[in-house]
Length: 178
Image (cartoon, rainbow, N blue to C red):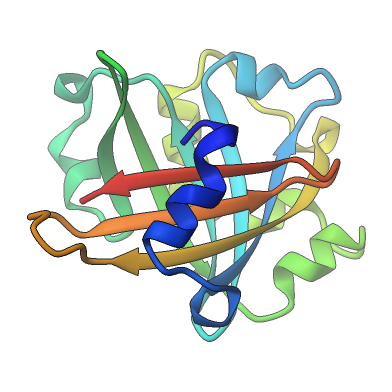
């Protein structure tokens, strides 16, 4: 949703902060965002009232090149993002984190590498363009995200609306269908 449409969309969908699922996201990258430039995302997510998790994600990927082994693995997801007439496929592997592990990394009390499982490291090495040196990565965030799952009368799909509140004060609103 364009910034000039955000308020109107939130009002039309009757959203308020009290009904949102609250998430806090951290990303891990080099100071020059080398992973982002290479299509790699390393993320940890705190979810109020649910399990915290960490994710390794690649965008873009060719879905046909993803082996059945990965597709059958718990926590694996293959999805397509559509913006206008562009469709970009991504693949991710997510694992549950113990309470406080993400906070410990954010505070510098625990290495970033400890957030990612052996399977996630193998996934990362299989699809990345080169090795990832976790010691060179920095914690980026936190980013507060409010998330709602909605149904709209007359619309056949479930909607997910996310409002991202970036550290610089900017807000981004994203709507997706499942």
